[in-house]
Length: 465
Image (tube, rainbow, N blue to C red; front, top):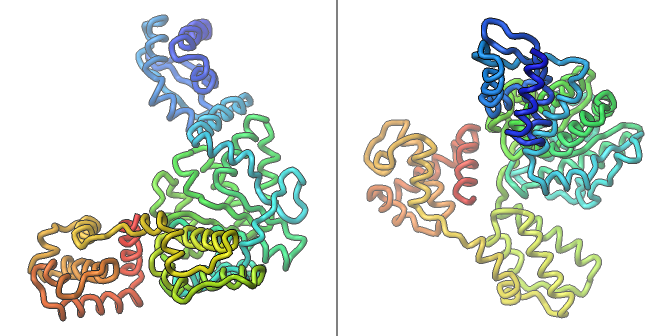
């Protein structure tokens, strides 16, 4: 059978190409042929699954042509002494699954390790991202308090700390702030901060260079591991397996782990259930979309910092309030708009008036002027709660319809400029007092019912996306 497999490999390489052959078929080892089944040993589950989906028919075709008794093929995970090569192929596949531009960025931006780290792994944290520069408001106060507690060190009471939220809400800022603060308080501590993409890249690199033990030693001998954007490893089986074992090893040693993602663990598709379970054992904190007050506070803080360096800066009355009201989707966009105004005023030596702001930021303001209609809200709420749109608008008073209807009324009041009577007409001709009651009811529920608050946050994200 070895001779037959050798002949089959020569033909398979021609059929699937050298690259696919080397990555996927070459790591396989034919172990037996029993009752018409050709059994292969594969180095990892990832390779087994991929070959079974993409190349099983090709392999069976070549084998059955050379040996008619072969009717089926089976791939079993059986790591051997030679599995490093096969595992590297699996890692290479996961590496290929990542966007090429992203992989280049991962290579260019090494992980940040502080305290006794190897020089080639050190990279500075962003000096702007500290607790002192983080503006706290109601949407992020719990996340800020939890991050502060972790940064202090010592017994925390929850592990891991899992921060999640949309783009530009402060997750990365808090991650950097934790690392800065913890290192300042505990200079001897080894703090490793990196993105999930960098974790995957280093894992693949270790497999290719046969240095997996060095990889394990690096990641399992830190005092604090911080992984940003963990949703990136979803669907990448080999990387998830190593992450799972690293996670368990650190938790068993009492080492702190901090994770961030763009959604809660249970909502990350492609993430293994055992990892979701481990992540859910700690404290999960949602960074909610910013409020007008928080956005205004951020703008005022940035303006004060800029004025400290440029005392002659003049900002007209109402400019910051205007920006906080008009740019609502993303703090990064908000800060970028303010920075553009600063540059405009500095280069042209002009006061930043409301008219100047409108002219200078016309493109940003147009982007943020996307109108959300009551129809959009009604469709999205009906879809979210799996009810008919006709029932949402109609007279039904069943709880499974009434509560979504009130939430749709609340969102219509929050996200559109329509008056209460107008909203009432769009909800089956209801009186404006009915709309007012629904809005107040949802406001009260959102304070006490976490599920309602999460539904509202999610619906706002979907509507504003």
